[in-house]
Length: 98
Image (cartoon, rainbow, N blue to C red):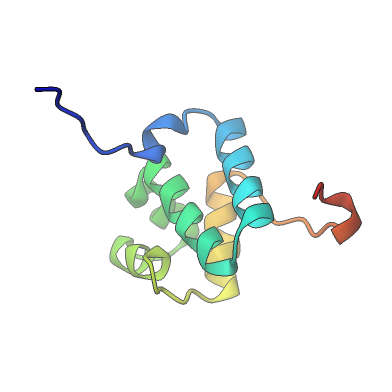
């Protein structure tokens, strides 16, 4: 019998470029909730405790904010992005490939 294990995307996010590309695609392809979930995956890839410390929030608060159904404030999202070494940059809708 073949054994399988659940794929954890966080394990594949090895570089800053990987995280930036992952979050960019999450923004382009999904809803705000999808982006928050992707931000949580990226934070897990870098270590929740480290990201929480850099973002100035508790680890428990970060888990709660970035969990499915979490509703983080923009300030939290911005701080987590900064802790991950990325920033949110608006672009025109025409710049997106359809």
